[in-house]
Amino acid sequence: MARILFIDDDAITLEILGKATELLGHQAILIDNGKSALTVAADQRPDLILLDMMLADLGGEEVLERLRRQPATAGIPVVFLTASSPYELKEKMKTTSAEGCISKPVSLSLLMDTIKKYTPN
Amino acid sequence: MKPGSCLFNRGIGRVGVILTLVSGLLLSGCSQASLQSSATEIPSPVAKAATPTITIAAGAISLTDSPAPISLSPTALATPTPQPSATPVHLSIPPTPTFTKAAGQASIPKAYIRILTPGPLSKVLSPINLEGSVIPGAGGLVRVELVGEDGEVISRQVLRFLTPAGQRIGINPQVDFEITGAAETARLQVSVDDPFGRIASLASVEVILLSMGDVEIYSNNNLLEPVVIREPTPNQIVTGNTLEVQGVARPSGNQPLSLELITDQGTVIGTRQATLGKVGPDGYAPFETELTYNLETPAWARLLVHEPSPRLPGDAAISSLKVYLNPENDQAPPSP
Image 1 (cartoon, rainbow over the protein chains, first blue to last red):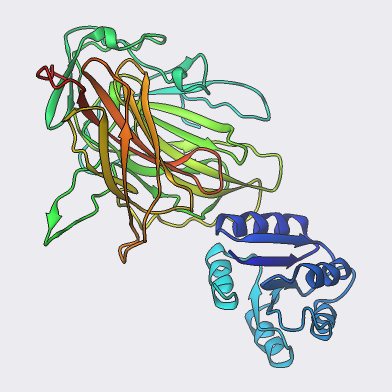
Image 2: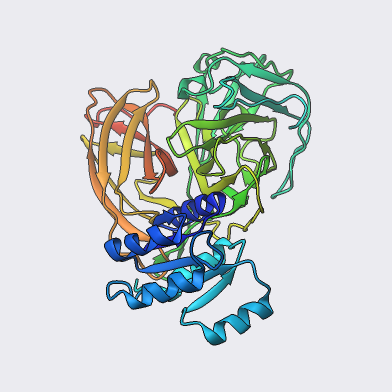
């Protein structure tokens, strides 16, 4: 069972992703802002972080940068969640240190594949 | 919702169970049944005992739990909600799994109850369009339920089909629901009972209920029986006070299987848990146990194997068969 940290300021998206993750047999940690997420990530050390690019308090890029600077979270794979177009996604992936990027709304099959790809078991 | 049917919702507190009368169409294969006629409210929807049973108006009832026939007197059927039928009805409750051996290894039979769509992990809005096929249980009844995260039944329908004994039919109920939050995990389950009110078979899929948003429907690609009882065989005569049980199951979690022996009178005379062994390449794991039962006189009983749901209260699957228990080995079995 993997532990997945979801960071998104949209409560409905968080709830659906949380339910889906539980249904897939994993543990979901749901955080709705970037600042809290940095603390929770360091404390709980999830196996994977799914991070919304457009958070209300901090930008997704900034959260990612801070995660990379914290020793406790530097090695955790991060996948961006975004409503951007496929072209924008492709361009973004050229400049970011995130492991991946997936479009919202997230299909359960894509979520399952993403968890499989980036978590150890 | 279809005419003549209703449902109950937790949030509203309205309680009702649907008995949808399905008649006329004798369907073959997985063809979909058409729903006709009227519906009847059943008093108490949640308790197992509330499952509606029917009175057959005329003629003897012949119930078959193949290969050996089972004959029951009409008094075996309780009658809280009469649904008279003009003609005698012949029912068949075949043993849940039947399988053939191929080249040294037993194959997994197709599921007794098949939920084609929605498949596991589907995200659904109300109403859920369930498509499946089943051999109806006693009285031609098929129960469709939606069970929420706390184990509470969100929705229940009981469909009634007048079809020839042992006939597989297609089902396509619309399952309405209401949830308070944005999303909730739920188990959509279909089950049939035997003439004595015991669950004969249950199949389910776990889905995510949405109050809004995008639907994501998957097909169920695995239509094989989730729990297969290899030993005993249906209608086997068992002597002594111990029943040896063997089989295979498709694991849905880490919890052990629960076994029950229930007499025709509803008495649980034995229970046991069985741990699943190593999962094979076919995705099935073996189980084997001895079930000791308390019985002084010979009797028919149903062996049920429950596979617990890994995340939600209740069972993900149930398979069963009938056996004749003869502790003293002193009598030939009566007709089941």
